[in-house]
Image (cartoon, rainbow, N blue to C red; front, side, top):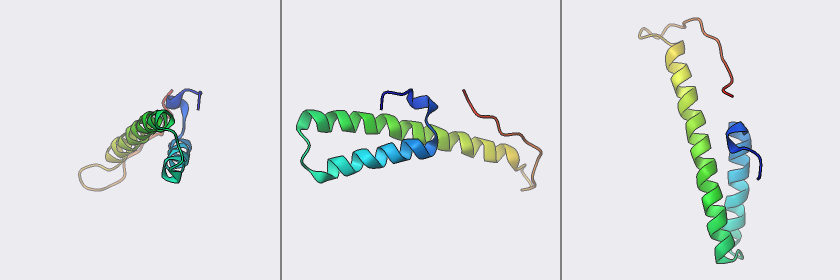
Length: 78
């Protein structure tokens, strides 16, 4: 998990988060490693939340106050 976390897609971040949860739920993780997994999970959770907020903002721009579609373009953040 050394790659830049901001470059992860929502799905990739969720998959990594699920893997960490499975490791922690197994219960045979040393305390120091569990803390490391927890910190990593919090970072991944933040990334997922930021991406969901961004998508929510995009959806609000797509729909005007009358619920009609507006023209839009989707641009990937870099």
